Image 1 (tube, protein in one colour):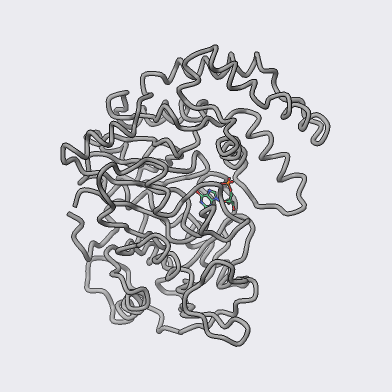
Image 2 (cartoon, rainbow, N blue to C red):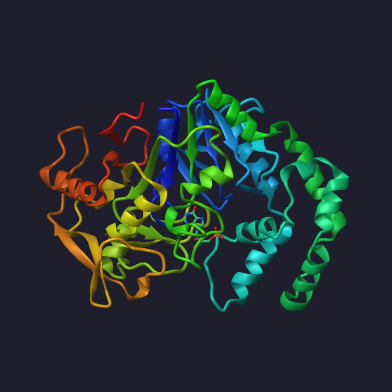
Length: 422
Ligand code: IMP
């Protein structure tokens, strides 16, 4: 297998970092294709925790080339700070980390705008406040700044001036916020560009070249399919293409197609921020899962909302991204719960719906549950219990694709491969 992708199959935070880190060992390149530092990919190795935001999760394997593709929105200050931190853990050089020259830059005013809009309402999205949406807006309106623009002062002035007056008026008169002057922002961004220039390259051609040489490429998704700008629960989504299609637009697979697409799903469901959540548990059990699963956002520290596994949404995720197998994570959190349920379908306007679809009113979807005998496995190396097997088998049968991996703890070793990814 030469091309493989790891995609969040829910609303993010499924444990993609851990699965990417594990599979990166067998790959030559790990490529991020969308999102930015709104992501928080946590990896535990020998009791040491590393949280990556925009640097690909393959970086902990020195043999791997980590690539930040052109579909990513990059905040240079944050990137350099993350780089400095990672350098203290593992060797990172311009030889094993590359940033696309055409990735879009997140500037200070994007962050200010994100925060101002969330404060203003009336419909809050619950963003991470990192400037992600405003930066993608500028990209789509053709006013974005690309990483390569940071390397030439004249180009930077020209690109930044494009629309800056409009922004200054908007901030001053609507939000009563003074944004930095163009001169200040140019100086800041140019300085940051100088510090990162050795990492900047044409990543599309790089991936092309590596694929032609038979190298193995792993694409690492951020957030999850249900947060996709097109496939997700709009408007409560992020602003990028988190689903499989984003790989083709945000990094490219020149001359190839994806062979394996692993959807990472928690054995229950979580969501941060606003938006519908049919299986949400607003009771003691929801609290118990939240506490036991340490369900706090890795980037914002916010409490995650928790609920049962939602198969109609997962079936939808399988279809939107052509998932070929599932990595089921955090099974240890469900062990020893006093009850265990899975939503196998919804009732919507008196009709049974097995697969969610765009346009469905999730607020009006009544989850239909199947109860399972709770399992109490300690995953200490013995055979899994028949209750555990029944739970996993039901998920697998319902989705029509194998559960190829399951994870039962944060560490690299706390995982079982039921399928070979080679
Ligand atoms: P934004 O990506 O900061 O614009 O946030 C938009 C929505 O996506 C909000 O509901 C966030 O909580 C959610 N979101 C963004 N990044 C992540 C993530 O990495 N994990 C989970 N949710 C996320």
